Image 1 (tube, rainbow, N blue to C red):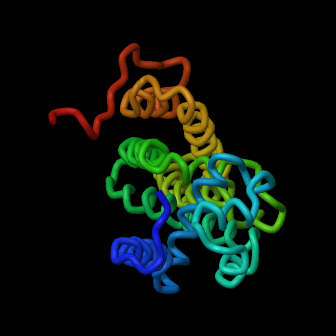
Image 2 (image 1 turned 180 degrees about the vertical axis):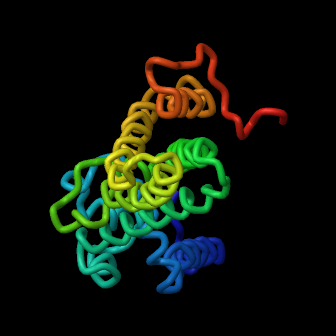
Length: 226
């Protein structure tokens, strides 16, 4: 039944509707920016860069398109912010995880850090591994892997030198190890089995023991005795 002008009930309903509308849009600039980043992150994860539009971002945020342009200058700007945030988040996870002194434990920690990120920040990982526009070539999953590989290279270089191997080959092995873990992570993103600890243990088994000396039932040494 429609509100009757002049009726107290009608005025109360109109006032409540106006208040509700006002409360939905009352955000600070920082809050609105964060909202748009989270919405963009989800859309880029679901659809990829090309299939996501400013119109859809604005519609999900219940704002007009100019609001998105005001904060990011367009879809490219929003995408760059989302990717940069995910790159830093993943790299921070991996670097923070590398606390052990033994190379095998470091490999375990790196593998677990990546798999935990995939498990807990699935949308963010999907954004990173999807096809990205050329403008973001230095801020994507490949750039994260290169950063991680450089850290692994330093670890391997010292280990190679102590064992009499050519330290110049550390870069090659670092790229191979990080690439193996990353590609397995992309596969595990979809299948989600076996559990991440088992996946990490088998990755380390292959990397550490090689095909000719695989353990039949590998476990993570960092989790033994717990």
